[in-house]
Structures are given as structure tokens and as C-alpha cells.
Image (tube, rainbow, N blue to C red):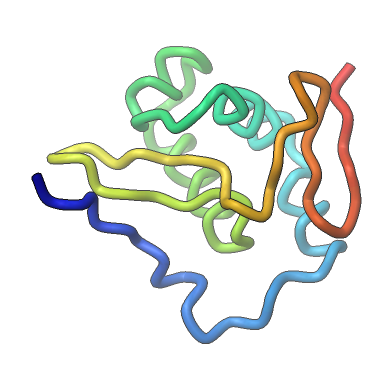
Amino acid sequence: MSQPETDNSDAIHREPPSCAELLKALADETRLAIVRVLMDGPRRVFEINATLDIEQSLLSHHLRALRETGIVYSNRDGKAMRYALSPHVTSLDESGINLGCCRLTFR
């Protein structure tokens, strides 16, 4: 069985994002909702969309913004893309996430 292909092309040769860049990427309710979905583990795009019920193009836009800042990463899973929180973004139980520079809690 082959390993899934990882798409980290946005992060290659890029300086780590500042805390302000990370927070700016998360300053959108849809992006926060995506992060909350991914706190439960990796999901394919159609699974994220089934939960959030938004236009596919809008979801792709938000996933790209999160990927470009390194908050999430993607793997090809057959014909689908699977997204997960990046290893440096850790869940704080179900209450929030640790971005490394700061912690965000959801209420």
C-alpha cells in the first residue's frame, strides 16, 4: 500500500507564519468552523463540506488560505483530498487549539 501524497508546496521554502498571520487566517467564521471539524481528525473535502454545507469553491478558497499559513495540510487520498491540522497545531481537548504562538478557545 502506497503512502498518500502530501501537498506541502505552499509551505516549501517559506518562512514560518507570524502569530498575526495565523490569527488573520483564522479571523473568519468559516475557517474557524473548518478547524473545529478537523480537530476531530483528518477529513476529505466532501466530508468537511457535508458538515458545513457551503459552496465547493468557497470551501476550497478557505482551505487554501488555511493551507498557505500552515494551519492545515493536505494529502491526496485516491481522487479526493484529505485535510488535517498541521502537526504544530494541537487540539486543547474540544475547547480550542494551540497555534504555538498562542492558544485559541472556542465558546
